Length: 479
Image (cartoon, rainbow, N blue to C red; front, side):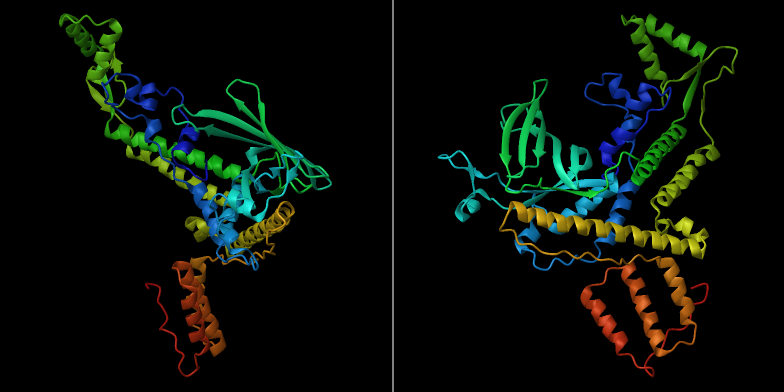
């Protein structure tokens, strides 16, 4: 929810404040029948999420997948679609996203169930024609951590595993879709791993709907990451994002209430209004008369009624500008904490300005190390998944993936400052060429440059001669 953001995340993580009225939280649609007009929209429906958690996950993927993985020998058709209309690179991006959010995920090598020979009642392999007819090919499936509810390893081999999912059965357009809980139990066996699928509809008992055997003795699942009941670093990111969501919603509410301030009405005005409503001959009940009073006197919420010992004048109260500015300052502080908790302070411009050179270097090293570790974990998982796929489908074309081990993590501000300082020095031709390559790297970080243009730039730099080489005049502080 945190990574994808949007209304589902708001519904799950927006907190109702203590003593908040139904009118403020839900709006008037829950309180008064407006004949189809939903009236005032409540704070819950007005809230929106600034999805920093999703931005962090996307930034990790941008760095991690900036350079393509070497998959020499892979089947082009499988590369384009490894299952679920998803390419192999897209599959691993989604897997990395799940590891970012959960800490681990599961990968499955799958294919259509074998045919049963009616004469023997045993499974038999398909012919090539039958494989084309039934679209029987190896596919990869991705399972979030929460979908694999239990498992057991013995000596690094899966002994059994349970997958759980909830789906909607909408096979009949004349019947309302039904929610179905599906659980599949896998077991390792010497003659081929077995699986049993159970379905549960409503309050009925689970019923076995299918079972089968795969051609591999191993359960065709691969674990990515490390399962643990301990908190994951992304939990802290989500927790701070939830606070930001709620602070932003409260700030918007405060601004709304300052534009439409709180009404204070003397008690005698309310009493006079009640008497006039009664004199008008209405047959409404006491509760209905109170509602009419509130509709007439409504401010941003319900008016405050003062007795005669108070000021006795109708007026509005609202917070001052300094009070309204407190929450935006807190939002800025917490966003800084959010990015610091990720360990990628290079995303936070404010923190970079006050960091020492040593801390900047550590931030860079932490980011590089994190990305390198993630690439190594995903490479090992892909190697294992390729081997597992070969076990369940002998016709699968194997390959050896090689993931990048260095990543172009650039602090653009620091690099630009360094390049300007170096441009003022008396450099050799070789040093000047290196300086131009650094400037090219900075330019590629600021805007997309095609591989062809990069090659052309590199060629131009290599062909520079000392007598033709000149740098632009140094920039002064104003520039």
